[in-house]
Length: 158
Image 1 (spheres, rainbow, N blue to C red):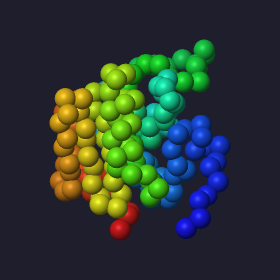
Image 2: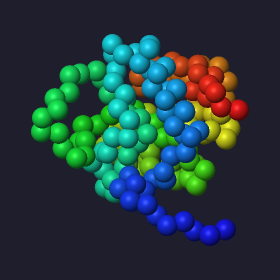
Image 3: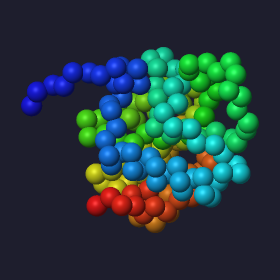
Image 4: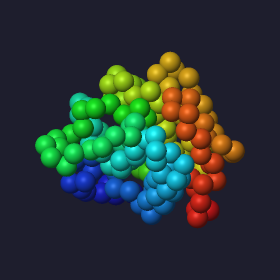
């Protein structure tokens, strides 16, 4: 197996380029979130957080607010409630868990989701070291009280 050249995207975001499955899952999550929780939360995609090293979760969850388009910094310093990472084929689960523990929780994130496409599963990590794995039914996040059908996340993917 030959190593691929690292792209500017991967360097800037500190993660692999998303594939079609990744994009569908991200789209499914955003649609489900907005349909049910648009009055409570906002769900920016690919938001560069002011962590060291830099990080760009696939989706962040913030309390809903009006956002000004003026004086926006390149990296967001406000801590999201939740970060969501969708595993790419070249990423290990350990790598994504490490991001939660070493980057997201120290900045105050309350929950970190890891979406695992190959298993059609969602692992929610909490700062108190609680880990909740969902392989069927409803994904329930105790930090936000968000509930979403696992089947909705993986809709259109076999």
